[in-house]
Length: 291
Ligand code: SF4
Image (cartoon, rainbow, N blue to C red; front, side, top):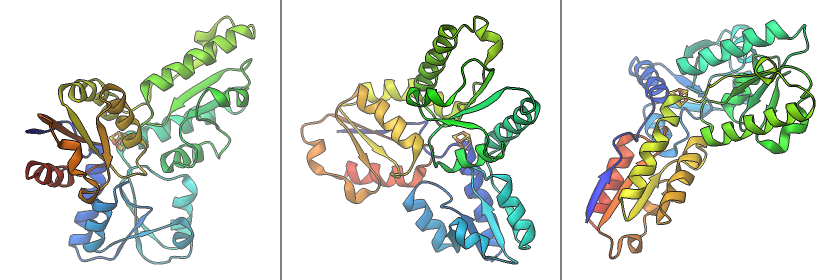
């Protein structure tokens, strides 16, 4: 049985950068807290925790003083930095540079349009850490939409500045913008190019993987998709594989592998999310190879 790892799977640049920053700080022997799990992958969180990285939630963060706290790749809203200032907390900045740029663009757009009648709209998952950070740039005045069911939140007669969370599906975003555009036209806005500013802010590290992943899922009899269950892009990339190859199985750890998946199969492909560590994918490859 051939067992192949998808060459593009493993950490994206932003997560790799955050993990490296954490490792460097831990190597100095310092006590470091991570505001939220550094990555949506329990196995990697466990590994870094064994090196001394402690995950905390926002309640605990607000009560800390005089320590070092790492901001993970998803980024944080401005109030987090304010709390750090008030409590003499040193921030270890590991926000992905792509997310940082998006935060800044949203902030500038919000400041520019808030006196007029423009609306900053963010297409993303409610409660997702990156989305919380993005909305924070608008003083939480931006409009969050998760899909066409939220169109009612937007006043389609006023200008819309649309942004997407970096890990959303390109297909879903395009679908949403098409429906929004039609709704504006139905409401008498003929110049939608001027009144609907679509910012293409889905990260290439996710969107570029879609076509490659489809070809990979088609190529193998069985696909094992490795990801933490909380990972937003993990769920999205898994569903892409599943659509192409019904014999796709989601696992978060080697213990979830089921031998029966591989009976009578000639080839198995292993892939994962942008938050799945390469070492975990290789570990799963070795176990499957030995079955
Ligand atoms: S998916 Fe893209 S934007 Fe998000 S952390 Fe990774 S590199 Fe950064």
